[in-house]
Length: 398
Image (cartoon, rainbow, N blue to C red; front, side, top):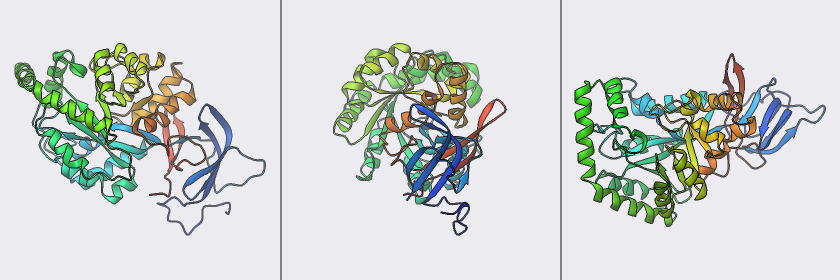
Protein backbone atom coordinates (compact mmCIF):
# COMPACT_ATOMS: atom_id res chain seq x y z
CA UNK A 1 0.00 0.00 0.00
CA UNK A 2 1.07 3.58 -0.52
CA UNK A 3 1.80 6.09 2.23
CA UNK A 4 -1.59 7.77 1.78
CA UNK A 5 -5.12 6.42 1.84
CA UNK A 6 -6.07 5.14 -1.60
CA UNK A 7 -8.01 7.88 -3.46
CA UNK A 8 -10.46 5.44 -5.02
CA UNK A 9 -12.02 4.77 -1.61
CA UNK A 10 -14.94 7.12 -0.74
CA UNK A 11 -14.13 9.27 2.26
CA UNK A 12 -17.22 7.93 4.04
CA UNK A 13 -16.01 4.31 3.86
CA UNK A 14 -13.11 2.43 5.41
CA UNK A 15 -11.01 0.33 3.00
CA UNK A 16 -10.60 -3.40 3.52
CA UNK A 17 -6.80 -3.09 3.84
CA UNK A 18 -4.98 -0.36 5.74
CA UNK A 19 -2.09 0.32 8.07
CA UNK A 20 -2.33 2.73 10.99
CA UNK A 21 0.77 4.08 12.71
CA UNK A 22 1.78 6.73 15.20
CA UNK A 23 -0.71 5.75 17.90
CA UNK A 24 -0.65 4.72 21.54
CA UNK A 25 -2.54 1.43 21.37
CA UNK A 26 -4.37 -0.18 24.29
CA UNK A 27 -4.03 -3.94 23.95
CA UNK A 28 -5.24 -6.60 26.39
CA UNK A 29 -3.06 -6.18 29.47
CA UNK A 30 -0.59 -3.68 28.01
CA UNK A 31 -0.20 -0.32 26.28
CA UNK A 32 2.09 0.13 23.27
CA UNK A 33 3.27 3.74 23.04
CA UNK A 34 4.36 3.78 19.39
CA UNK A 35 2.16 1.21 17.77
CA UNK A 36 1.24 -0.01 14.32
CA UNK A 37 -2.06 -1.71 13.40
CA UNK A 38 -2.19 -3.73 10.17
CA UNK A 39 -5.57 -4.63 8.69
CA UNK A 40 -6.36 -6.99 5.82
CA UNK A 41 -9.86 -7.80 4.55
CA UNK A 42 -11.41 -5.84 7.40
CA UNK A 43 -9.65 -7.76 10.17
CA UNK A 44 -6.61 -7.04 12.28
CA UNK A 45 -3.66 -9.21 11.24
CA UNK A 46 -0.89 -7.51 13.21
CA UNK A 47 -0.67 -5.08 16.12
CA UNK A 48 2.35 -4.10 18.16
CA UNK A 49 5.36 -1.82 18.22
CA UNK A 50 5.95 0.02 14.95
CA UNK A 51 9.03 -1.41 13.20
CA UNK A 52 11.77 1.18 12.53
CA UNK A 53 11.21 2.87 9.18
CA UNK A 54 7.80 1.23 8.63
CA UNK A 55 5.35 3.33 6.68
CA UNK A 56 1.62 3.59 7.27
CA UNK A 57 -1.44 4.65 5.30
CA UNK A 58 -2.77 6.63 8.26
CA UNK A 59 -0.84 8.51 10.93
CA UNK A 60 -2.66 8.77 14.26
CA UNK A 61 -0.49 11.65 15.44
CA UNK A 62 0.01 10.15 18.89
CA UNK A 63 -3.71 9.60 19.57
CA UNK A 64 -4.87 6.87 21.91
CA UNK A 65 -6.00 3.88 19.82
CA UNK A 66 -8.79 1.74 21.28
CA UNK A 67 -10.94 -1.08 20.03
CA UNK A 68 -14.34 0.40 19.27
CA UNK A 69 -16.66 0.48 22.27
CA UNK A 70 -19.46 -2.09 22.64
CA UNK A 71 -22.68 -1.04 24.39
CA UNK A 72 -24.96 -3.84 25.62
CA UNK A 73 -27.73 -1.55 26.90
CA UNK A 74 -28.65 1.79 25.39
CA UNK A 75 -31.93 3.71 25.44
CA UNK A 76 -30.64 6.44 23.14
CA UNK A 77 -33.07 5.46 20.36
CA UNK A 78 -36.07 6.32 22.52
CA UNK A 79 -34.61 9.76 23.23
CA UNK A 80 -33.85 10.37 19.55
CA UNK A 81 -37.32 9.20 18.53
CA UNK A 82 -39.08 11.48 21.05
CA UNK A 83 -36.70 14.24 22.17
CA UNK A 84 -39.59 16.02 23.90
CA UNK A 85 -43.06 14.86 24.96
CA UNK A 86 -45.29 14.93 21.87
CA UNK A 87 -42.37 15.70 19.52
CA UNK A 88 -42.08 12.44 17.58
CA UNK A 89 -39.53 12.11 14.78
CA UNK A 90 -39.58 9.54 11.93
CA UNK A 91 -38.30 6.23 13.25
CA UNK A 92 -35.75 5.65 10.47
CA UNK A 93 -34.35 9.13 11.09
CA UNK A 94 -34.13 8.41 14.82
CA UNK A 95 -32.22 5.17 14.18
CA UNK A 96 -29.75 7.08 12.02
CA UNK A 97 -29.21 9.87 14.53
CA UNK A 98 -28.97 7.37 17.40
CA UNK A 99 -26.26 5.33 15.68
CA UNK A 100 -24.49 8.55 14.74
CA UNK A 101 -24.58 9.76 18.32
CA UNK A 102 -23.19 6.44 19.52
CA UNK A 103 -20.40 6.48 16.93
CA UNK A 104 -19.46 9.99 18.00
CA UNK A 105 -18.97 8.51 21.48
CA UNK A 106 -16.78 5.70 20.11
CA UNK A 107 -19.52 3.03 20.17
CA UNK A 108 -19.63 1.02 16.94
CA UNK A 109 -21.69 -1.91 18.27
CA UNK A 110 -24.80 -1.07 20.29
CA UNK A 111 -27.69 -3.11 21.63
CA UNK A 112 -30.76 -0.86 21.50
CA UNK A 113 -33.44 -1.54 24.09
CA UNK A 114 -36.72 -2.67 22.51
CA UNK A 115 -39.48 -2.96 25.14
CA UNK A 116 -41.94 -5.84 25.17
CA UNK A 117 -44.79 -4.92 27.47
CA UNK A 118 -47.85 -2.73 27.82
CA UNK A 119 -46.25 -0.09 30.04
CA UNK A 120 -43.14 2.06 30.23
CA UNK A 121 -40.76 1.57 33.20
CA UNK A 122 -42.75 4.20 35.11
CA UNK A 123 -46.11 2.51 34.48
CA UNK A 124 -47.46 4.69 31.67
CA UNK A 125 -48.99 3.25 28.48
CA UNK A 126 -46.20 2.12 26.17
CA UNK A 127 -47.67 3.77 23.07
CA UNK A 128 -45.96 3.66 19.70
CA UNK A 129 -43.77 2.62 18.03
CA UNK A 130 -44.28 -0.96 19.14
CA UNK A 131 -41.66 -3.69 19.09
CA UNK A 132 -42.46 -4.79 15.53
CA UNK A 133 -41.74 -1.33 14.12
CA UNK A 134 -38.61 -0.91 16.25
CA UNK A 135 -37.25 -4.31 15.23
CA UNK A 136 -37.92 -3.59 11.58
CA UNK A 137 -36.01 -0.31 11.80
CA UNK A 138 -33.07 -1.84 13.68
CA UNK A 139 -32.84 -4.82 11.33
CA UNK A 140 -32.71 -2.62 8.22
CA UNK A 141 -29.45 -3.13 6.29
CA UNK A 142 -28.22 0.42 6.89
CA UNK A 143 -28.86 0.09 10.65
CA UNK A 144 -27.07 -3.26 10.88
CA UNK A 145 -24.15 -1.85 8.89
CA UNK A 146 -23.92 0.91 11.51
CA UNK A 147 -23.60 -1.60 14.34
CA UNK A 148 -27.21 -1.62 15.53
CA UNK A 149 -28.32 -4.70 17.45
CA UNK A 150 -31.25 -5.46 19.74
CA UNK A 151 -31.66 -5.85 23.49
CA UNK A 152 -35.10 -7.39 24.01
CA UNK A 153 -36.45 -5.87 27.24
CA UNK A 154 -39.31 -7.97 28.58
CA UNK A 155 -41.70 -6.80 31.28
CA UNK A 156 -42.36 -10.05 33.12
CA UNK A 157 -45.74 -8.86 34.44
CA UNK A 158 -47.19 -7.88 31.07
CA UNK A 159 -49.50 -10.64 29.77
CA UNK A 160 -48.89 -9.67 26.14
CA UNK A 161 -45.14 -9.09 26.46
CA UNK A 162 -44.03 -12.70 26.26
CA UNK A 163 -46.30 -13.41 23.29
CA UNK A 164 -44.77 -10.51 21.38
CA UNK A 165 -41.25 -11.60 22.32
CA UNK A 166 -41.84 -15.17 21.17
CA UNK A 167 -43.09 -13.84 17.82
CA UNK A 168 -39.93 -11.76 17.45
CA UNK A 169 -37.65 -14.65 18.38
CA UNK A 170 -39.27 -16.83 15.72
CA UNK A 171 -37.63 -14.60 13.10
CA UNK A 172 -34.14 -14.63 14.64
CA UNK A 173 -31.38 -15.68 12.27
CA UNK A 174 -29.75 -19.00 13.23
CA UNK A 175 -26.47 -17.62 11.86
CA UNK A 176 -26.30 -14.85 14.46
CA UNK A 177 -25.54 -15.04 18.18
CA UNK A 178 -28.55 -15.94 20.37
CA UNK A 179 -30.82 -12.90 20.86
CA UNK A 180 -30.07 -10.88 23.99
CA UNK A 181 -33.09 -10.77 26.32
CA UNK A 182 -33.34 -8.87 29.59
CA UNK A 183 -36.25 -9.54 31.95
CA UNK A 184 -37.46 -6.58 33.95
CA UNK A 185 -39.81 -5.75 36.79
CA UNK A 186 -39.97 -2.05 37.55
CA UNK A 187 -42.68 -2.35 40.18
CA UNK A 188 -41.98 0.39 42.76
CA UNK A 189 -40.66 -1.09 45.98
CA UNK A 190 -38.17 -3.51 44.40
CA UNK A 191 -35.05 -3.39 42.24
CA UNK A 192 -34.10 -0.03 40.80
CA UNK A 193 -37.00 1.70 42.56
CA UNK A 194 -36.67 -0.04 45.92
CA UNK A 195 -37.83 3.25 47.46
CA UNK A 196 -41.16 4.08 45.73
CA UNK A 197 -40.49 7.77 46.43
CA UNK A 198 -37.75 7.66 43.76
CA UNK A 199 -40.33 6.83 41.13
CA UNK A 200 -42.70 9.48 42.47
CA UNK A 201 -39.96 12.09 42.04
CA UNK A 202 -39.27 10.82 38.51
CA UNK A 203 -42.93 11.14 37.57
CA UNK A 204 -43.04 14.69 38.90
CA UNK A 205 -39.77 15.81 37.32
CA UNK A 206 -39.93 14.02 33.95
CA UNK A 207 -43.61 13.32 33.30
CA UNK A 208 -45.14 16.46 34.80
CA UNK A 209 -47.25 14.73 37.47
CA UNK A 210 -48.44 16.60 40.52
CA UNK A 211 -47.04 15.05 43.73
CA UNK A 212 -50.40 13.66 44.89
CA UNK A 213 -51.11 12.18 41.46
CA UNK A 214 -47.64 10.61 41.33
CA UNK A 215 -48.18 8.98 44.73
CA UNK A 216 -51.60 7.63 43.72
CA UNK A 217 -50.18 6.32 40.43
CA UNK A 218 -47.38 4.46 42.19
CA UNK A 219 -49.71 2.93 44.77
CA UNK A 220 -52.20 1.82 42.11
CA UNK A 221 -49.47 0.38 39.93
CA UNK A 222 -48.07 -1.66 42.79
CA UNK A 223 -51.51 -3.16 43.50
CA UNK A 224 -52.16 -3.91 39.82
CA UNK A 225 -48.83 -5.59 39.17
CA UNK A 226 -48.87 -7.69 42.33
CA UNK A 227 -52.18 -9.06 41.05
CA UNK A 228 -50.16 -10.42 38.12
CA UNK A 229 -47.73 -12.50 40.13
CA UNK A 230 -48.84 -15.61 38.26
CA UNK A 231 -47.95 -13.94 34.95
CA UNK A 232 -44.45 -13.22 36.27
CA UNK A 233 -43.91 -16.83 37.36
CA UNK A 234 -45.06 -18.24 34.02
CA UNK A 235 -42.94 -15.74 32.10
CA UNK A 236 -39.78 -16.51 34.06
CA UNK A 237 -40.35 -20.25 33.62
CA UNK A 238 -40.62 -19.80 29.85
CA UNK A 239 -37.49 -17.64 29.71
CA UNK A 240 -35.66 -20.35 31.60
CA UNK A 241 -36.71 -22.90 28.99
CA UNK A 242 -35.45 -20.66 26.18
CA UNK A 243 -32.16 -19.82 27.92
CA UNK A 244 -31.30 -23.39 28.85
CA UNK A 245 -32.06 -24.47 25.26
CA UNK A 246 -29.59 -21.85 23.98
CA UNK A 247 -32.26 -19.93 22.08
CA UNK A 248 -31.63 -16.68 23.98
CA UNK A 249 -28.85 -15.09 26.02
CA UNK A 250 -30.62 -14.08 29.21
CA UNK A 251 -29.97 -11.08 31.47
CA UNK A 252 -31.68 -10.18 34.71
CA UNK A 253 -32.35 -6.46 35.13
CA UNK A 254 -31.73 -4.75 38.50
CA UNK A 255 -31.16 -7.86 40.65
CA UNK A 256 -31.29 -6.84 44.29
CA UNK A 257 -30.53 -9.89 46.42
CA UNK A 258 -28.40 -13.06 46.24
CA UNK A 259 -31.71 -14.89 45.89
CA UNK A 260 -32.46 -12.93 42.70
CA UNK A 261 -29.08 -14.01 41.32
CA UNK A 262 -29.53 -17.65 42.31
CA UNK A 263 -32.89 -17.74 40.53
CA UNK A 264 -31.39 -16.07 37.45
CA UNK A 265 -28.53 -18.57 37.32
CA UNK A 266 -30.94 -21.48 37.76
CA UNK A 267 -32.95 -20.39 34.74
CA UNK A 268 -29.83 -20.24 32.58
CA UNK A 269 -29.08 -16.53 32.87
CA UNK A 270 -25.74 -15.21 31.65
CA UNK A 271 -25.78 -11.54 32.74
CA UNK A 272 -26.59 -9.62 35.90
CA UNK A 273 -27.60 -6.27 34.47
CA UNK A 274 -27.25 -3.26 36.82
CA UNK A 275 -27.22 -5.08 40.19
CA UNK A 276 -28.52 -2.66 42.79
CA UNK A 277 -26.50 -3.98 45.76
CA UNK A 278 -23.02 -5.27 46.50
CA UNK A 279 -24.56 -8.52 47.74
CA UNK A 280 -26.21 -9.14 44.36
CA UNK A 281 -22.99 -8.35 42.48
CA UNK A 282 -20.97 -10.69 44.72
CA UNK A 283 -23.49 -13.48 44.16
CA UNK A 284 -23.30 -12.92 40.40
CA UNK A 285 -19.55 -13.37 40.55
CA UNK A 286 -19.96 -16.60 42.53
CA UNK A 287 -22.40 -17.97 39.93
CA UNK A 288 -20.19 -17.01 36.99
CA UNK A 289 -22.51 -14.36 35.56
CA UNK A 290 -21.25 -11.34 33.64
CA UNK A 291 -21.90 -8.18 35.67
CA UNK A 292 -22.93 -5.06 33.75
CA UNK A 293 -23.02 -1.70 35.56
CA UNK A 294 -24.01 1.76 34.40
CA UNK A 295 -21.41 4.10 32.90
CA UNK A 296 -23.46 7.18 33.94
CA UNK A 297 -23.36 5.86 37.50
CA UNK A 298 -19.57 5.49 37.28
CA UNK A 299 -19.10 9.00 35.89
CA UNK A 300 -21.47 10.66 38.37
CA UNK A 301 -20.09 8.74 41.32
CA UNK A 302 -23.42 7.22 42.31
CA UNK A 303 -26.79 5.91 41.22
CA UNK A 304 -29.55 8.39 40.46
CA UNK A 305 -31.90 6.18 42.49
CA UNK A 306 -29.57 5.72 45.48
CA UNK A 307 -28.54 2.17 44.59
CA UNK A 308 -24.96 0.87 44.77
CA UNK A 309 -22.20 2.97 43.20
CA UNK A 310 -20.66 1.54 40.04
CA UNK A 311 -17.32 2.92 41.18
CA UNK A 312 -17.54 0.87 44.36
CA UNK A 313 -18.34 -2.27 42.37
CA UNK A 314 -15.38 -1.65 40.06
CA UNK A 315 -13.08 -1.10 43.03
CA UNK A 316 -14.22 -4.45 44.44
CA UNK A 317 -13.55 -6.22 41.15
CA UNK A 318 -17.25 -7.01 40.65
CA UNK A 319 -17.84 -5.44 37.21
CA UNK A 320 -17.18 -7.01 33.81
CA UNK A 321 -18.76 -4.34 31.62
CA UNK A 322 -20.18 -0.85 31.63
CA UNK A 323 -23.20 0.16 29.53
CA UNK A 324 -24.26 3.64 28.46
CA UNK A 325 -27.88 3.14 29.61
CA UNK A 326 -29.11 6.67 28.80
CA UNK A 327 -25.91 8.67 27.97
CA UNK A 328 -23.56 7.29 25.26
CA UNK A 329 -20.76 9.75 26.05
CA UNK A 330 -20.35 8.34 29.55
CA UNK A 331 -18.71 5.13 28.33
CA UNK A 332 -15.59 6.92 27.14
CA UNK A 333 -15.75 9.32 30.09
CA UNK A 334 -15.88 6.37 32.49
CA UNK A 335 -12.41 5.29 31.34
CA UNK A 336 -11.06 8.69 32.37
CA UNK A 337 -12.89 8.67 35.72
CA UNK A 338 -11.85 5.16 36.72
CA UNK A 339 -8.19 5.79 35.89
CA UNK A 340 -8.19 9.25 37.48
CA UNK A 341 -9.73 7.89 40.70
CA UNK A 342 -7.24 5.01 40.82
CA UNK A 343 -10.00 2.40 40.57
CA UNK A 344 -8.59 0.72 37.45
CA UNK A 345 -5.55 0.99 35.23
CA UNK A 346 -6.01 2.03 31.61
CA UNK A 347 -6.15 -1.49 30.18
CA UNK A 348 -8.79 -2.63 32.65
CA UNK A 349 -10.87 0.53 32.27
CA UNK A 350 -10.83 0.14 28.49
CA UNK A 351 -11.79 -3.54 28.79
CA UNK A 352 -14.90 -2.56 30.74
CA UNK A 353 -16.31 -0.77 27.69
CA UNK A 354 -14.87 -3.00 24.94
CA UNK A 355 -14.00 -6.66 25.47
CA UNK A 356 -16.10 -6.94 28.65
CA UNK A 357 -19.43 -6.02 27.07
CA UNK A 358 -18.56 -7.94 23.89
CA UNK A 359 -18.06 -11.13 25.90
CA UNK A 360 -21.20 -10.47 27.95
CA UNK A 361 -23.24 -10.27 24.75
CA UNK A 362 -21.64 -13.41 23.31
CA UNK A 363 -19.58 -11.60 20.65
CA UNK A 364 -16.09 -13.05 20.28
CA UNK A 365 -15.00 -11.17 17.15
CA UNK A 366 -14.57 -7.64 18.54
CA UNK A 367 -13.67 -5.59 21.60
CA UNK A 368 -9.88 -6.04 21.51
CA UNK A 369 -6.95 -5.05 19.31
CA UNK A 370 -5.79 -8.58 18.56
CA UNK A 371 -5.15 -10.54 15.35
CA UNK A 372 -8.37 -11.92 13.88
CA UNK A 373 -10.65 -9.33 15.43
CA UNK A 374 -12.87 -7.00 13.44
CA UNK A 375 -10.96 -3.82 12.63
CA UNK A 376 -13.36 -1.55 14.52
CA UNK A 377 -11.01 1.12 15.85
CA UNK A 378 -11.41 4.43 17.65
CA UNK A 379 -8.82 7.21 18.02
CA UNK A 380 -9.15 9.38 21.11
CA UNK A 381 -7.57 12.56 22.45
CA UNK A 382 -8.20 14.49 25.63
CA UNK A 383 -10.23 17.62 25.09
CA UNK A 384 -9.55 19.50 28.30
CA UNK A 385 -10.71 17.33 31.16
CA UNK A 386 -12.45 14.66 29.10
CA UNK A 387 -11.51 12.30 26.26
CA UNK A 388 -13.03 12.90 22.84
CA UNK A 389 -13.24 10.76 19.71
CA UNK A 390 -11.26 12.22 16.81
CA UNK A 391 -11.73 9.36 14.33
CA UNK A 392 -13.48 6.03 13.93
CA UNK A 393 -12.58 3.23 11.53
CA UNK A 394 -15.35 0.67 11.06
CA UNK A 395 -14.36 -2.74 9.71
CA UNK A 396 -15.18 -3.31 6.05
CA UNK A 397 -17.14 -6.44 6.94
CA UNK A 398 -20.83 -7.46 7.02
